[in-house]
Length: 237
Length: 400
Image 1 (tube, one colour):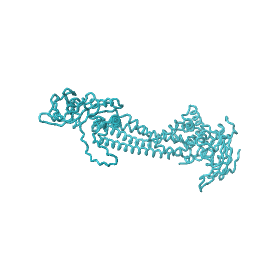
Image 2 (image 1 turned 45 degrees about the horizontal axis):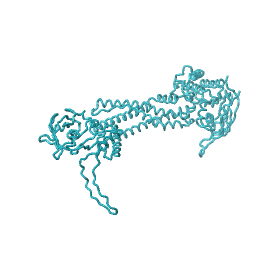
Image 3 (image 1 turned 135 degrees about the vertical axis):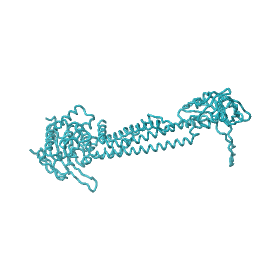
Image 4 (image 1 turned 45 degrees about the vertical axis):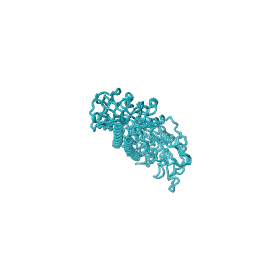
């Protein structure tokens, strides 16, 4: 289905380290030299106890945070030496985020929220972009709710809007931080299915942090993080 | 810029109560500044017009006579006890040439040579001291449009005709067409015909001034062919000082601007302007602090949304501009509202006020106030906007 080569490398970590409070007596290393590679076809779960560094790793991969050492390649580009503006641009174009708390912007309608990553990058949305956003909203089952404000939607619906928003730029990599942690099991299954579909359809690598073993079991690959080290990296099924 | 604008206005719209409150605050501040500025400007121009309606902007006079002291021979210390010389009435040397030079000066709008000196006006037993003012009528009228202040008869001088003030006419019981004897001292007398009576509204002038043709005044004051003063007006009254200085440098004569002769008035006007500016500055400062504090609170309230926007690729510059636009919009909308309210106050003052004077409505004041308020808005938004731009997206997203 995808126009991309499914084995194309999306992301690669090389000896990635992350410390907090660098240079202070309270300095602590959270990630101890990780190596990891994600391809377009990957649908991976990142699991581990709380405090194992999952969220930190996700933030680093999403260019929200800088690693202390090592290198992060995104779409084969080394990112360590990039300046802030370039990182922001790459984040906007190559990465989609879905957070645990849906994080929509209340002042905007559902449709505008979905369009936000495009509007931030290129300004006033084109006809084609609006159609794309409407199409995504239809795919996540929210057709007809385009003009609603986020607070008029249920939690599951809001999370589906967030998924549509994350995908509107056709990112190469979708990062999700406990996207279903706040949802009832029915909504959680729906949202999970959406990730699945988009992974197949768009050839968009998915890395999702989850505590829910039922969810991680349905992923193709499970990466287990223990105390800042990759304990195991298994392909399933 | 479109997306920054959209986010800024949506945020403002979402925080309606906050936005409305600060808008009202800005509007009140701007209304106070606009009204106060218009009021003081109107008051001052009224005072200046009244003052300058009866005097030239610059008076050019001969330099004062000084004692000439022989310099001491070298090696001798000279102690001098000096009495100032009495200043007799003197003509300006070569006043015709000086007049012609002044005529060509830039910024000078009218030049009028005048011969002026003391005399007595007598009618039967009654005696009044007066000031003889010998003028070149067409030139003088461009300095002081005396023909507009004639209350009886016509403004006509020469051939034995004189024009006198209303108070003098009343003191001596004179009417248009009556004769008046003028005594310049030392048996120089002449009888003039009262052709017109003026009222300038300044008691001293209305009781003392007698306008004559130059020739007649010259012979009464025993200064044949003389002019003792050259009156000058300039296009911008506040340039008078500079033009006067230039005249002094050019001619070597003493040139005094109205600002020097009315030093106390100028002092009063300056203090008034200064206190107005101080009030305006403090009002503007509190408006700026109001904008800054509302936006600071807004940045904190929107920390998480800022984090999401940053995660979606919004740059720091874009985030900065969102809040700068909000500051500018507060300034613009607040000053438009406040400007209108200020003009409303001015209108109310002109219609229902004490009507002592009229406040002119200057549309540029609104433009200036709006521009200033926008700049103030942007400046006061700078601190919160920088904070929004520098938020760490990781921290911001976690913010609850």
